Image (cartoon, rainbow, N blue to C red; front, side):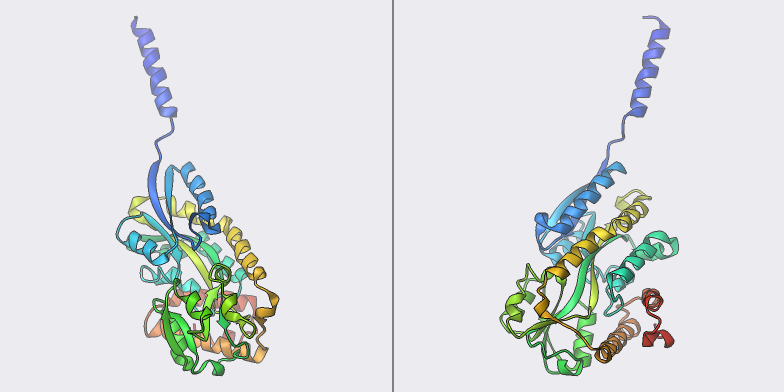
Length: 336
C-alpha cells in the first residue's frame, strides 16, 4: 500500500473518532418519593435524567421511600446527589431551605417567581452553593396545611394546649408550637399519619400530596378539618456534590427545572383538588392577619436567634409577597 492511501485511511479514522460521541459520565441520585419508583416526582426526575444524558451525564436514579435514609446515604457518599425536602436539606445550606419558611410563600405563583429568580440571576444562584453542596433544582411538593381533628380549632389562641405532631428536625415547627403554647409531639414521616389518625395528636401539618398516601381522612373523621391557609410551601430540592459534576451542569439543571416547574405545580394543585371540599375550613380576614403575624414572628426568631432561616432569602420573599399584594401589613414595616 502506498503512503497516500495510508494517510487517507488514517485521516478517515481520525475523523470518525472525532465525530464519535464522548462516553457519558454516570452519576447517582438518591431520590425521595413517598411512592418510590411509582411516584409522580420520580417520574418527573426520569424526564430530567433523559435531558441530563444529552449533556454527557447519565443519572442513576435510586428511589427511597424514607427521606432520612436518602439524605444519610448522600451524606455518606453513597450517592452523588439527593432529592429531598428543603427542610431536610436545611443543615447543608439554609439559603435554599428558607424557600419553605413558615408563611413566607403564600401561593404557587410566588413560589414559581422565586424559583425563576434563582435560576436566572447569577448573584442569587451563587448562594445555592455551600462547600461542595449545590442546589440545582426545585419542584413543588404542595402547600402545607394544618389538619385538625376538631374543625372549630381555627384560630391562633385555640392552639394553646393542643397536641401538635411536630417534625423534630424542622426548626420552624417547634418554634411555632412553643410560641402558641401548644404541646409538641415528636414525629417523623413514618409516624405522623398513624398518630393523627389514632388520635394521639390533635393537630398535624402535611402537604396536600400527603393526604391520600397517609390516609389522613381517617383522622379527620366527621368533625375534623383542614385550615385553608398554607403554613408553608413544601419543595423537593435537587442537591448535588459539585465536584462530581461538570462545571456547567448546575446552570443547565436550574434552567431545566425552572422551565418545567409547572409540571410539579400541576401535581400539587391536583392533590389540593382531590381533597373533599367538606374538609376545608376558611379563615376570616381578621384571623388570617393574626396567622400572618405569628408566621412573621417565627421567621424573625429563626433568622436572628437560631440562623435556621437565611435573612437575604427572607427579604427576597417579602418583596415578592408585597409585589403581589401591597396591602399586606408587613409591607409598611420592612422587618424582613
